[in-house]
Each structure stands twice: as C-alpha cells, then as structure tokens.
Image 1 (cartoon, rainbow, N blue to C red):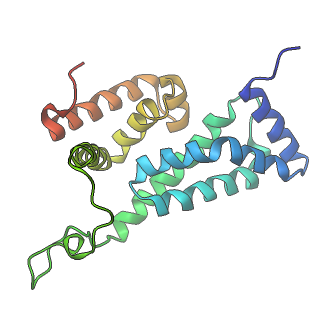
Image 2 (image 1 turned 60 degrees about the vertical axis):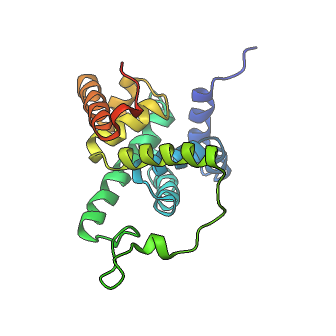
Image 3 (image 1 turned 90 degrees about the horizontal axis):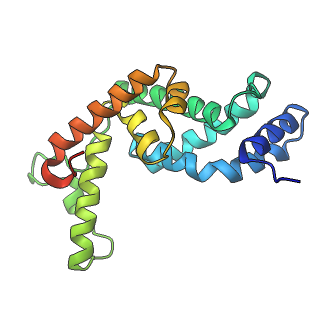
Length: 197
C-alpha cells in the first residue's frame, strides 16, 4: 500500500476538522506553519506582523473550514488566505505609517538605528555576506506588493506559476509578468549583485 501524499493528508485533516476534530488543525499547523511564516516574513519584512498573520491565517482556516474544496490543494487555499491578509496589512500600513529606525533625528542628524546598541559584532567575512543579504531583503521589501508576492512565492517557496495564479486569483500570464517586472526592479536596485538571466 502506498503512503498518502501530503496533499491527501491535508485533505484528510480538513475532513477531520470539518467533523469537529480540532486536533486536525494542530497537525496542519505543524506541517505548514513554519513555511507559511517564512512566506509572510518575506512578504511583509516584519517577523511580528508575520507571526500575527500566520495565526490569523490558521484561525480563518478553522472559521471557514466548510468552504474548503477537497479538489483543491490545501496549500493553495492556505496561501490565498495568507495573501489576502498580506494585502489587508499593506492597506493598514499605508493608513498607519511607522517611524523608521533609519530616519534622522532633528537634533543629532543620526538615525535611531545608529544610537541603539548593536547585537553581537560579526567577523569581516560574515559582515559582507550579511550586508549583501540585507540589501536583497530591503530591495525585496521595497517592491510593490503586487510584484513582491508572486516573486516570494516563486523564488522562496518554489511554487509553480499555476499555483501562484490560483493563490493570487490572477492569470498565469499575470504571474509571469509580475515576476519579470519584480526581477527588473531588483536588478535596477541592486546593480551587479544579481546574475543576469
């Protein structure tokens, strides 16, 4: 007898959840929580917001469990819920801007981030690698949401374009175009740091 696929296991857990077995949600969270959290961190650029939205996504899975279509992949449904939450958070952020740690103080002319004590100092090699990684993170975070989400789903979560289209409720061609435009933005922002395709 063949072992069930992850998609089959997810469908079974959703069926159990629909029958009122709350432990099924725990198993879904164990299987998908970490990967979803990483997607949300990359989408939002903020771990606290990502943790909040990951919890909210699973709360909505529970609340809307009767709407789940077993013919659909659970991960597609989960990421669609999370992507909608990300869009809501972007809207909220535009209405509630936050002060950046890099903003210069009026009196000192230095950023708040420069006045905070540093964590542990990094050796030279690690520092350069970390600076490069930070530049990429900032460039990805700086992308418009409609470009950032498909790029994160394609590159970091390694989802096929058809599934990304289902998650974002758009066509595969729109996904291709958005990923292409996101990469163009990143090349412009990062100069020679990214390889040419």
